[in-house]
Length: 115
Length: 112
Image 1 (cartoon, chains in turn orange, cyan):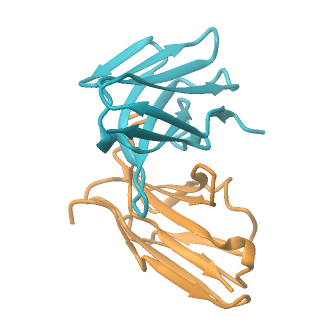
Image 2 (cartoon, rainbow over the protein chains, first blue to last red; image 1 turned 60 degrees about the horizontal axis):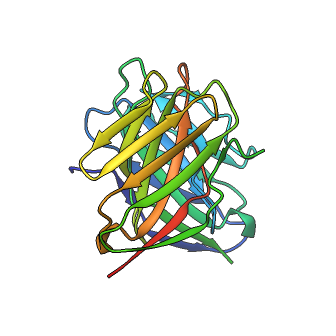
């Protein structure tokens, strides 16, 4: 597709359950990012992939959060033992990397609600 | 510790007038700044960027100004249009990293 695609657009889950959020980046973009946006806040960095490897995972809040990008394209953010505080909009973005920071293109996000 | 701050949560401007959105940062290592616009239920959309080697970048109705000594940047929209009504986020990054640090956003309402 032309833009970054995220599925599902909405996810409601019970506390303690496991969830997976998917991101399809723009074709040809080697960099992929996950951000989390809580109400009234700006997007908060979680993890950045360069190709298949996580180049920077310093934003993951704890070991319940994990992300993969096995073939350097689609990425999955996985959250184990979800807590109500995990409720937020999870944004994925992708960009070309040319040796300098470049604008990232965001998907529409997945709204996660933990009840 | 909020490294990127947008101290005005909201701003209302009459159509046709200038909108000025402000952003302050604390980390002197930041050397690349971006503005994103966000409509409800959509992801942020890139608007304009500026490198620290410049003090101004213009793209149509949008101009970003950077004052490195004051660690301050601003986005000017002129003339403002009702379709500009959205939440605007300032973001910063620095060489050697590709992650962006976002501010908390300013909700702009352009009144017709």
